[in-house]
Length: 195
Image (cartoon, helix red, strand yellow):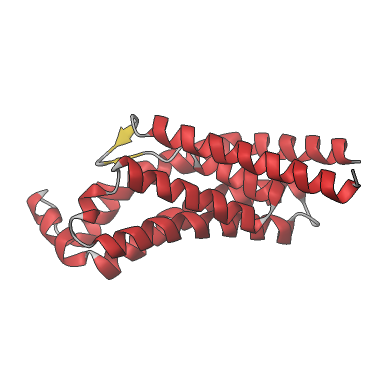
């Protein structure tokens, strides 16, 4: 077996492993809720997978995350409003979060591997939540305005930030910041074993 095939097989096995981790963590994460939505525990393995395997692998892991969100019914509140927009936003936010984490890791890693890993860990929830917020404004604003009024909030913006994303985002970002050293260790371990 040539070394190129071994490396490709190794990457494929790692991608399959990260895919399984994303699926399992998203299913388990459905039981942890802050507000109306479950917390995305999968953003850390997406960031790690993106850093280890590249931006396209990160995008794949993000797509898998989005697919599990859709299948699990975690996006049902939005599905009844606009199914096509819901599918687009959920899949796009996951894929872009993974891609951005991998791309920024690759861009920064030659300068500082630790900072690159931490950046990947931060960018993943930031992009995921940012695209969700953008999707809320573009596709669901009238409904979210009604939901905000019903919840006693002054505006759709207050409802989106305070009712939908703040606690989830803080939790997701905190998990990624706490576990960023894990990213660094995994990358260093891989590099040590590839040498």
